[in-house]
Image 1 (cartoon, protein in one colour):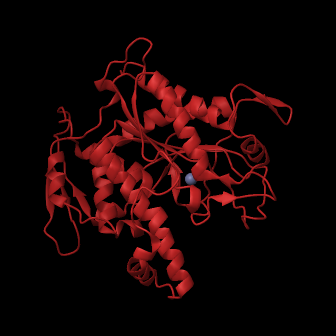
Image 2: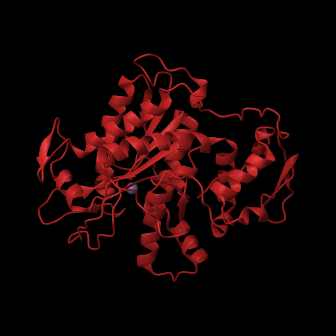
Length: 380
Ligand SMILES: [Zn+2]
């Protein structure tokens, strides 16, 4: 489902990075298991990139050590390229907000829905959209231009699972999974909401909105089991995700190698780290949540900040600009479930003995504050 990579396009990054920085980003952020060496070799003067087995190499000239690097061609501005105005810390910024998931009639299909008895259903796609609309008002008030990748529940792509049966069969075959009609349907649905939908949002971001950065909004969850008899938990936590940590197996896919290089050579990591650090600080202060800790190989720490992790998601790799990807709150923790039951409201309410704002406003206020802290400061 990925478009054919245009490897010659990488030539536009000639002279925009030194070999030392290229290697540091590959080894510490994007492909820390070192398997990039099968595809890329570096000398101080050039990178030799193999597009795919048997193809002619792409030779990318690198910036000589110690000399100034060229700014790579890109549609987004760094923090240092703009000057905030007094009272309008986000003036001149173009921001896309991506409310995670589809919600509405697709919430059950995408397994982002549960309810307890006659409770208000907990639907991540609906919840992220409420936060997105509140966040948009706050960012606009601080001077930014703001777009949402979706402004209602549902899909932005015209693809649907019944149009993806051929792709689903191919994908199951590649995994070596047995073909049954149930598995085929399940895989076609996954390709629709997880792949086709995200690819369309990336097209909107990279070709239409072309923002300075994207804020991806999510709510986290622990395994809840049966969505009509979900397990509630005492665990509640926060983390943010940066793009990278691609495994050797993932790197076997030509489109993953290509989009990783576009992301790396575009110079997004530095801004992702700075903006995510500021938003992690404000979200942690507002929510009091402890950091989530990954115990699997699919994420690595981004820095000494315990809230920041690097993980290879389609939804942060395909966006060619920096991404601030938020994963606060465990939806099936008891306190979060109770707050979701109250819906959105102004001011404070008593929640289990604590006077609290609506969970949606707490989330939106904290993200807006973090972005103002980061982009409102003059860069040094
Ligand atoms: Zn999510």
